[in-house]
Image (cartoon, rainbow, N blue to C red; front, side):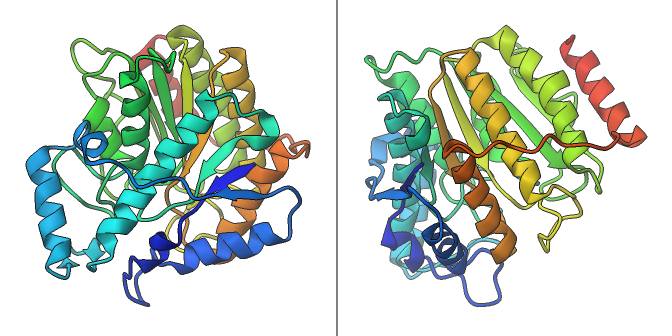
Length: 336
């Protein structure tokens, strides 16, 4: 794979006791150092008009002024310092770099992965929350949709972070050209992502939420991919595929109760690669959460290894009855 990374993302100082620290990127880099064929690119800082294409201009100005004044606590979870402004622009810019690389024809082994921070999927149109200031994946996707020469008229953002991406849903809820799909743990922050949240009046069935119960793992995620995501995207037919790649559903992550294994992330990676190929859709990855340093590094590493030729292990085991009920409810809501 080809990874987008900028040192500016390390300067977003959240404090040593905050779960979203620069050590996350350092751990990923250490883990990738042991693997073959890793390349890095600097990406670029996002332009203001690209940010304002998905965020309210007054909100962007407020964020800029807040950070220029030294930052502080925006809310209980979301903190910033002066350097966070450049880090946020860098993180959004890396996501746009990844999408541009994918559209430009990156082959399988050069599939782009933006490893920036702060993450983005909780950032709503006019609000920062959940460690997020700008919605990196949304910025990148909207820029591709707006570019006349991109060849992208429709896009999917598939969010496998353990938390629901309320910000991404908020931004695209009424857009019929973006399909947002999320697998998340039911009951976790921010409390959104219900099965019946399926899109606005003119964008029905463009939002697919799968709020699985805690304890769900590889077997449940496999069932979602095959029974829900694949048929939904066969109907939607995306021109671009972006993964909001959080790794906090890992069984060793400290802030969730999910049971996805490192090999499970390998299976997810291979499946989205195959679905994207079925639709001739360029594929890009954008880092979201993941707060256990070793499982985060291992999971990003296996994403790289899948594109470097590793065959994924097929998840075994039975889907639990509580998860089956959720899957069936989603199927009914979307007529799949």
